[in-house]
Image 1: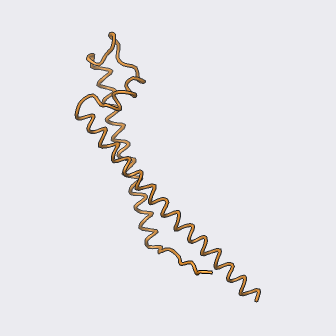
Image 2: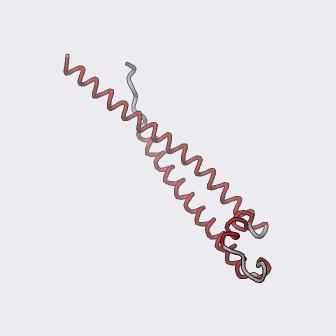
Image 3: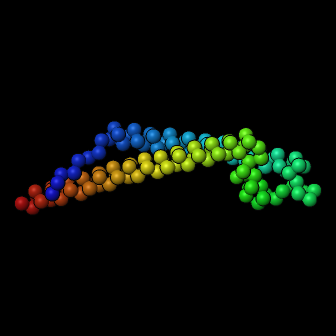
Length: 124
């Protein structure tokens, strides 16, 4: 049986740090996204030019339209940038988490292989 080599623990520590940093960036971007959406909600419920039939739009309408499309070029751009950044970071985060998981599995395989070799040695 081929001898399994352990992953580099320094690389795993660095990867764990990168995972933490990406999670932080995602949370910060999500907070920024929430802020932009809250500002949009505030604007469309207070500014009568967005009202329909003399009433402010419903929260469902705001969420399904204005939070997606924005209410101006600047909000549309901000929403797009934040969503793209969140998507990119989430993809990178998932890849890093999978790599970390592979390293953990390699350690488990090494542990099992080492135990089997010790048992075989003791049995002989």
